[in-house]
Length: 350
Image (tube, rainbow, N blue to C red):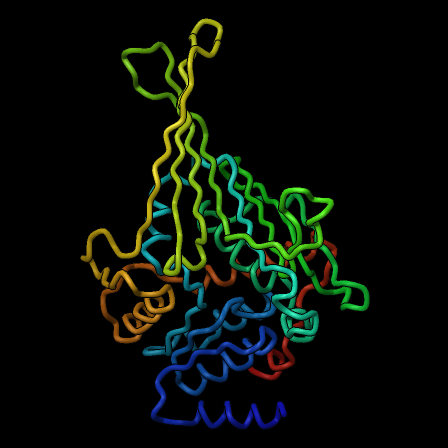
């Protein structure tokens, strides 16, 4: 069967009428067919995660052929980043003020069978290589920096009889240069989370992806009060598929305190809600319609880059993709799991 697939893929890459290809193959095949596509002169939209590990990512994104003139475009498909809602969300806070950022996303138990390719180690499977990849990318995006250290990482193994090298669910935590803490929880077979846990703990869990960013408390200029402090929390619901539904909650908690003994005089909370389905101002290369999906926005930017046109400015560059895989590798090692296997094709090319 695989030999037939390889023949089909080769025929596609040999077709002179095709300018670009999308590679949604299992993770373990991304490096080989991504590189083959580039060598065939095709522009490549490469499904996340771009490769199986950081070694492959460095080999692919720093390949000598990408330093030549008029080379094909290579883009890792983090589609959510191209949507106006994500970029608007990032504009609601300053990354240096982040105290804590957490990304949680899950799919209910039973959505994928335990025999799904996502849980095949030879094909570079695992929850961190699927939903967890998005979670890590979200945390990297909000901090705009790479972590200093990874402090915690743990995983729930596959059920009895499953591959011990695969994570059914994973949690991790990092310290960032500004002193903030970033964490993720990702689960491809989630259960529980309802009221009456003794009764519902085995029920498949339904939950929207959620990203929460808490900022440091700051003093507000207020001539009426001695000390007016405010702390902002921003919550992005369904950040991965905002074209289907999303909501951005901006929660400002105010406190009036006595400057002498820091005693609380009064406090209150103000919450504003945002939904953004198109660019606030369609200029500087920002185009789109309210119904455009994240995938459409991403595709438009790929075409803009291929045609050397001005675009929205949103992109995933080569070093970004490499650092993404380095963070995934570090998380697996901290969790006591092996790195995903390196493609044999890596050693066969120059």
